[in-house]
Amino acid sequence: PAASSGTFPVGTKLKVTNLDNGQATTVTVNGPSGSCVLLNNAAFEKVREPGKNLIRRARIERVGGGGDAAAPAAPAAGASGAAGGAAVQVPPATGEVVCQGSTVTLSGEAGAPAASSGTFPVGTKLKVTNLDNGQATTVTVNGPSGSCVLLNNAAFETVREPGKNLIRRARIERVG
Image (tube, rainbow, N blue to C red):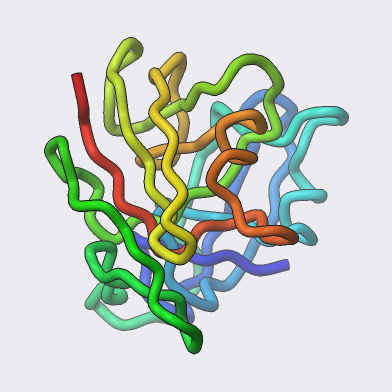
């Protein structure tokens, strides 16, 4: 069990409690992410509710020692090109670029393409571009999450790379 974080530095110990079922796990931050806390599969399995791929109400506590005072640097979100491969043509931004450095993952929720967000209110239109493959989708925020943007399954399928459940280099724009 471990976590990545855009808020806490590597080495920080965190206790994550799912407030809907009372289950908790203690993890160590092992890398950066675009979320406050992004649990790996082993940690998530300890606190999840059966059949749910998202924890909507969580308490996150710093416990014990570990970690420096500075938060980790977020990966650049404005660059184009695939890591270690040929450059991918990514169209220029057409809206206000927001959530600089965010990663994007999926919520596991069904339905028409949509997103949840901890940054934007319900009804906000966002364009999410995967900078590693140039694919983009425009979605409407339909609920809260702990991430800048958390795509549902249908939206994530339009921008994902085969076999990947995380977009490490994304551009997120407020549009409309």
